[in-house]
Structures are given as structure tokens and as C-alpha cells.
Length: 256
Length: 226
Image 1 (cartoon, rainbow over the protein chains, first blue to last red):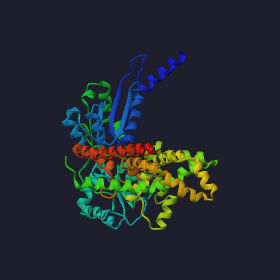
Image 2 (cartoon, rainbow over the protein chains, first blue to last red):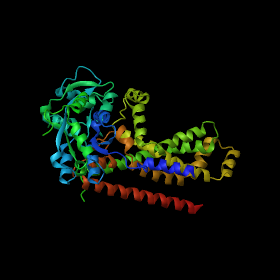
Image 3 (tube, rainbow over the protein chains, first blue to last red):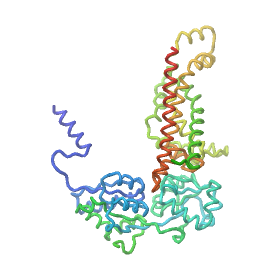
Image 4 (cartoon, chains in turn orange, blue):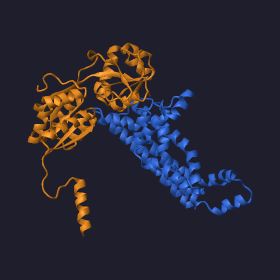
């Protein structure tokens, strides 16, 4: 009998029940995968001040998260790498429009193993294989496509099958880091994670729309004092300096 | 319901990749199944475990290990590049990923078939002077054909659905390596892609269902003959 009770309590624990009583406030965050390290660092910093709060982040592509949220997945805060998905959720009344802020910005770089001969967009036409996130599914890919089109080389690179579409930025980075491709377009924040690949050049931000990470609270989140407090924390100086440390650009006035 | 030319590309590529992957896997599966059924070496159980691993491993693990092996810095990759063969990011990489993922299903089926073969037939062949190779080719192979056919339908169906290993090893290049599951993934990650995703899901369900029916039909047909 003792065993049965033990097994039951283990199962309860695994399912997240707490038969002994109600647990402290928990905050669910749905955040774009490219934010995983920075958001985790922020959660750790916040938990130092508020150890009683349970923060559960869910990292996936912005699109996958948006679809989960519109299907009723629990979340208090949504941070997207793509304004389009934020607009999608806004249309479906899954976020509170007045809470929407531009939390972060990012930039694009070209990263790879090989050396000095690659110094800008004009030297790309000499390369055989260039990895980038798939523009059909990943926002990073759409920014790259925009920049390549603005330079006037996208169609040619694609027709000659020299563009390798990866699932997302991290996979493009993996290909560059292992030398499977001559180089890859990735976010500046991801390039900092590479083991071997180094940044070969920065992409001129004028070539593509601004890369912004909008954040907002869901209707459920706006009612939770704990979630509101953490959302405010993300916009304060402690969090801003953590985001900067991970390579993000923090807009001068994020509380718009 | 509208099927775009890009969807047709994905469909055609999926069928091509699954067909070639199954064709490549058949001889390998036949030889491995024969080893597993007819040898009692010390490494036989070990081999049994290894060939079944792709069945239970996350496909992304298979894809990642294949990338390490066949990438530019990998041992196989170096041989390939010395021979000037481009594998990664081509449809051949998708074939390799699918063949390895489908192999255990094929081996399981062929093994079951081989275990049904009357051992007296093999004894008779051997005692009448047939070599091991001859017995394998002239007795075991023809008697295993029904099992190979049933296994092939399963491996083919599994190949059509392969996603995790393919997206790592072959990338997601429309018209080159973008099979149906990868195209569906793209649609689900695009605002407004619901319609396109649904069309490809239906196509995918239809093909897979037909393959399963075919598999069941072959299995029954073969059981009735015994």
C-alpha cells in the first residue's frame, strides 16, 4: 500500500499536480527560439528577486507558438521574432493590444569558416553554397531574402541552387560552423554562439526591414499580477543589460 | 482545394525519394536479415540491436549523426569529396536518410518471412552440394520475395513521411530536397498557410493509406498461400 501511495504521488508530481496544496504563482512564457538563452538568463535574474514565482518558458518558432496560442495553449506573455505573427494573434484577440511593445531588435551577419575574401554582399556571387533560414517559414530567412533582393542577387543565387534553406537560423549556423557551406546568414545574436565560424561581415540594415521582437501579454496574462510584474521587469534596465549581453539591440524607448 | 506547381514538385520528389530509398534498402535488408536469422555469431545479437535502432531513435538523431559522418569533416564525407560526390543538400541525402529510417521495418518483415522457410529445404540444398551463397540466392531469396514485397510497402510509406533526418541532412530546398512533410512544415509556419498545409496533409494521408492497404493485402495474400 505504501508503494501505491508513493507511485501515485510520483505520477501526480509528473503531471504537475500538487495534492498537498495550491502552488505559488506560475507564469507561462511563449518566446521565439532565438531568444532562448537571453530569456532563460532573465528568468534566472528575476527568480533571484522573486524565488516564489514559477516561470515556465516555451521556446519554438514564432509561428508554431502563435498557432499553439490560438489553439488555446496557456501563456501569459508572447515574445515573437516576427511582427506578422503578433498581428495574427492580435486579429484573433489572443493578445491585449495595449500591452504590445517592441522589446528588442536584432541585426543580420554573414558567418563562416573561410577567410578574408568574403567581405560584403558583392563577394557572395563567388560562393558555391550559402545557408540561410527558409524564407517560407522563418522570419530570419525573409529578412535575408529582402537584403539579397535589394542587392539584386537573390534570383540568380536561387536559380543556380546555391542557397541552402535551413529549418531555422540555428540550423543555418550549424552548417556554417561545421563548414558544410561556405557561409550562412544568421542573426548577430546566433553568430555569437558559433564554435568555429566567425562573423565575416555585417549586413547593412538599410537592405531589409528592421528586425524587431514585439512582445505582448495575453488576455489571461494581463489579469495575472505576477505576469504583469515579470513583463515590466523585461523592460527594465537589469533585463535590458542581459539582452544586450546576448547581442540584442534594446530600443532606446521600449515602453512605447 | 488547389495544388500548386510547388506542391507537385514536393509530391513527385517524395515519390522519387521513397522509391529509390526502398530500392536501395531492399538488398541491404535482405543480407542483414539473412545474417540475423542464419548466423549464431557472438556479434549477431549486437547487430540485431544496431539495425533496429533507427526504428526507435528520434529521426533527428539519425540525421545529425549522418551529417557528422557524411559532412565535409566526417570520415565518409572526406571520401565522398575525394571522389567529387556531392551528397549533403541533394536529393541523394534524402534517399540515404529515408533508406536508413526505413531499413528496420524492411528487415523485420524479411526476417519473419525467412523464419517461415522450412529448414528441411535448406538442409536438402546444402546436403545436395549447394554452397551457402547458392542456397541464399536460389532457395532463400525466392522464398523471401513475398516478405520483401510486404516490407517494401511499409518502408516506402515510412520514407514518404520522413522529416527529422531529411531536414538536417538534405536541408529544405524547394524543388531539390523539399519533400511533402517538409513542404507541410513550411506551410504551417506561414501565416495563411492553412489551406496549402491541408491539401498536402490530405495527399499524404491518401498515399500512406493506400500503401498500408497494399501492405495488408500482400500480407493476407501471402498467408493464404501457406
